[in-house]
Image (cartoon, rainbow, N blue to C red; front, side, top):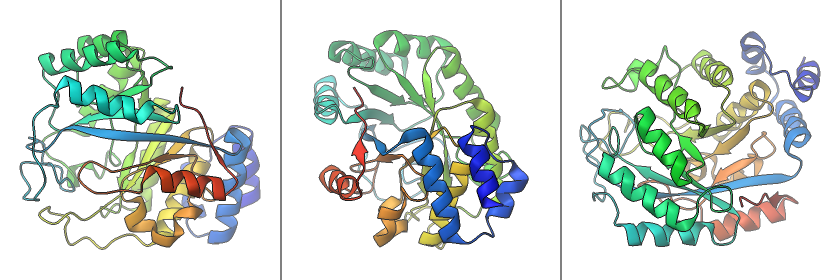
Length: 321
């Protein structure tokens, strides 16, 4: 079964939800070997890198049960308002200087204010934006006019995770509906922005939930899917959630490769915490992208060590600009 599905995927046909559920029970080694072939068929030996800047931290009015930045939770984190333009510009320039990484500007809260968005747009214009200076934004529920302003400034991509399946989402957040997240993704696409949208795994969702999310992302036609693994932050309602095993995490990546054969699968939050000494296997599982450096409120893998890992595995970084 794996080989038949693999050949279909290489032909550009993602497997069905029913077939994906069957893959869950397959041998891990065989599953990863097939996922590697699918990745190589579409992306060769190249790996995409990105990093993020936490440009506004904490006091978010959303009640996401996993989030250290929610004002509804009691995690001890650094809290600060929107970063001043000079600091933000310097951070973006540092991340994109060697052409290896896209830089994502991430802010807490339901959305940035109009004034804050204008400040960000001015910084991107000053840097140049576009494909030569790739800047992405993860900025909350923006209006069509907001998104058009970002596009005009040179922002190339908008990030807005769906987080989970529609059926499971109410277990994650009650201050926003899944349909509102969907509307934001569609509005960004309508504004001409590329969209990065994925989910967080290990929150108690079922395999059916995971597959339902992948099918929704496939229907949306996003070309970049971040895969995050829950870090059970102290002070959040999910603080006692048992972590995923590294094997289950790798299986999630591999099955997403079968479901989304030609889409960039970008491994992001929780990578080092969940995969541990099996991080080097994430490319074998089908991933072709990494978020490198620190996450929003937790330390991540450092850029230099990620470059070394990629080189040691005979892979190479795809130039971002």
